[in-house]
Image (cartoon, rainbow, N blue to C red; front, side, top):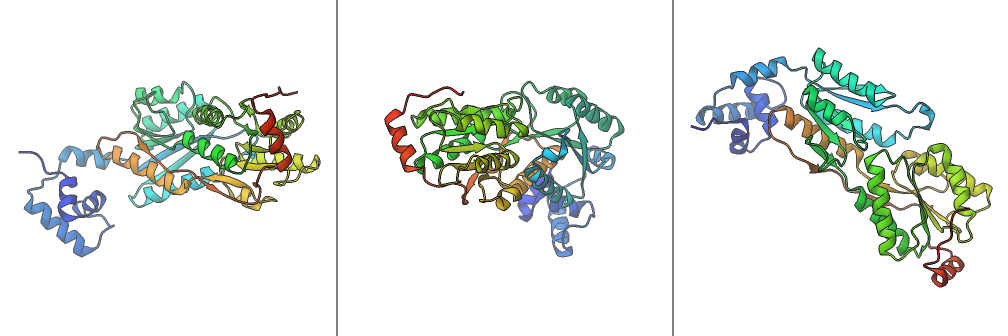
Length: 355
């Protein structure tokens, strides 16, 4: 006969598998009436504890790990999304008596060493990997070590590790369509390092969306750092036909861009609209407040943690979609300047090079 599982009991009792686990193992987390109902259903279904699984459970550290690369200039970090994301992970884990162990490093090689040490010392049961890069050495290293992992990022097709991903291509298209709806025909993007998979996805999607709208496609600048924002903004505005809208990768870049625009006497959004890829408190505090793409980082973290817990329970997991981006409209974006829009309509298809 097929062994009765906690999933079978959960379906019969119309509760979650975690509630069944709590009840069967005498752990807090469910009410007494629910516990007794679950135990009765389990007995009636002929459930018997899996001794191998119990031995594994007893050996668990009840901890999950997350390692992040800390920027060497910590003052330049844009950590709003990461903090909310980690808060979501911790919230989900805490409901399952699991703690989050956080470690910061400066190099990917050091991150791999942390994974190896955690596995050897049995410090964590599994890990969340963030910000996957091109040809990411962490992914095969984790498979070789044997440490269970879930990747927060779009690695579909490049690794057997399960991933919880957000659609950066869809978000890039959404941003372009929003700017086009305001009448902007020269839209620039100041992107981050192309080492990151999400940057490449965003850059490619931005280019395709621009092409689909019939707009000039030579205004996408990647591999920009926070310190480059001022210089790149000046370069873009020195063109014979400057952009009427700029999408910055981070809030820090956008803040530097705003400062540069004020120095040049350019009004936002009357002369030029500014938008940010990731929303943050800094976007709300800027003057003018910055329009931004917003993802529910807290819920994203919960989804990633839940996926890892499912994997640690021994159940099969596959890639799943995470949160969906939406536009948080604020005062930094508005209709394209009428004069510039009229000139662009006459000159479209004749892009000039950066000077």
